[in-house]
Amino acid sequence: MFEVELTFSADLTIFLHRGLIAENLVHRRLSEKTAVKDVIEACGVPHPEVDLIIVSEMQSGERRAVDFGWPVQTHVRLTIFGVPAPADVLPEALRLQTKQWNRFVADGHLGKLARNLRLLGLDTAYERDADDRRLIEVMARENRALLTRDRRLLMHAVAQHGYCPRSADAEEQTREVLWRFASSADSPHLAPYSRCLRCNALLRSVPKADVLDPLSGEPLTLHYYDKFRRCTGCGRVYWSGTHFEKLAARLERLTGNRVAKH
Ligand SMILES: [Zn+2]
Image 1 (cartoon, rainbow, N blue to C red):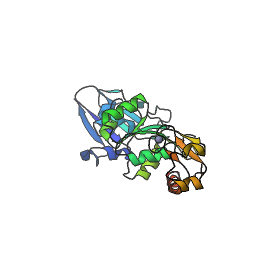
Image 2: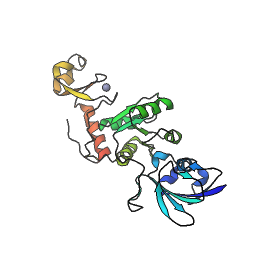
Image 3: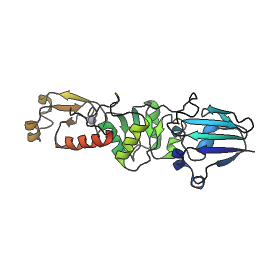
Image 4: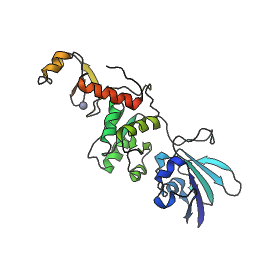
């Protein structure tokens, strides 16, 4: 048996199991060699939320960064930082998470977040009824970052990039995702109004003649508008109608910027 001491940065303490939250120093007893990733996750913190792991040797005091597979086999102290780890802590050391990503898969409880990300033009897979196995499959096959508030799911062995939205509010969650994956409002990743809110496929500008039929029940729309976009996936037609003002206002709240009309 040997003991490991863990210290978590403040942003990670929300993940710690109840009994551990109040402790600045978490002690764990291990009976065999264990990957550091498993030691951290046993405390409740999913590995995609960890950016830097520092090992301090008890005797020499030497500090160094390690990756998730590093085997814990003697008494050491671990310091674990969330994303992004402070730049002044072992600045040359390996960071474990990518800071930029623009492909996502959102779990079934995050429909409004998925819609907001699509509104911003971010490629976001979402199926309301997707079970855990389906989410993991889409994440791995399409190389998407997993967005879920289910911490156990985020701990899945094949999860590489992922994030647990802290807020229960969809707009706040959207800002969190933008912040975490560094897609600022002027980032080339953002292309508002370029994706279908319903199915995630790209929109394409179409001549008015092409929408006369699908919009035959909307004579006023056809009278007042001349620019239309159509989803290349489901065929839904978009135009700058009254709903557009609401979307523009939401975009402004999400990015803090005024976004030009298309
Ligand atoms: Zn569509």
